[in-house]
Image (cartoon, rainbow, N blue to C red):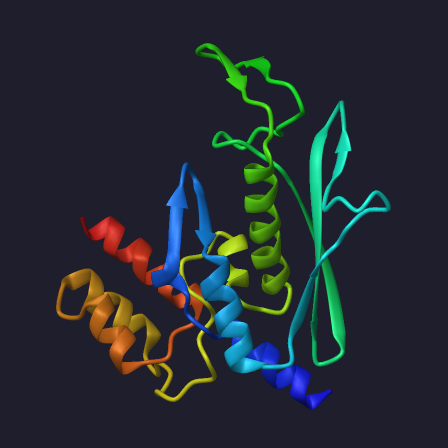
Amino acid sequence: MSDLIDVIKNLQHLNVSDKVEKKQNLSYLSWTYAWDKVLTNCPKATYEVVKQENGLPYVYDPNTGYMVFTKVTIEGLTHEMWLFVMDGANKAMKSEPYTYKTKYAEKTCEAASMFDINKTIMRCLVKNLAMFGLGLYIYAGEDLPEELPPEKPTVSNWGGLLKAIAEGTATKEKALNKYTLTKEEIEKINKVELIKK
């Protein structure tokens, strides 16, 4: 159990932000990079693409579209994840093209292909790996993972630091280099810097 806890802690604190790609308003982490990081931290990790009774790696419903499933096992713990097959506008893809209305125009969602299904399976795997901590913060909409336990001192005069930043005699960058700050403290500094502008 302690091995599992160590692996999860290590994965949670890996900063993968430089490997994240943006598409529309969503963030994506490459499955090859994600799997490499997991294997580096836990070489015995395994994953499975869940196949249905008919042998296919997806479920299809004419009303809702396609859904894929994966399972990841690390140190004896298995998590399952699922993801629907979607187009570039994040609309559920079906076996036939269909149209839908936005407030600006009518748009078409193309029919799903095996390329779309395969791509979704690998995205589902990355989402599954996040259940063990890798890049989990991406799904929470955050930019960076939580920091490891403090190695730098915490701020002893918090009000004084905020005042110095507001007056321009200190900066957020210097504060981050000198102190261990919580997410809440960083948000307060961001607000002070925003007011200052």
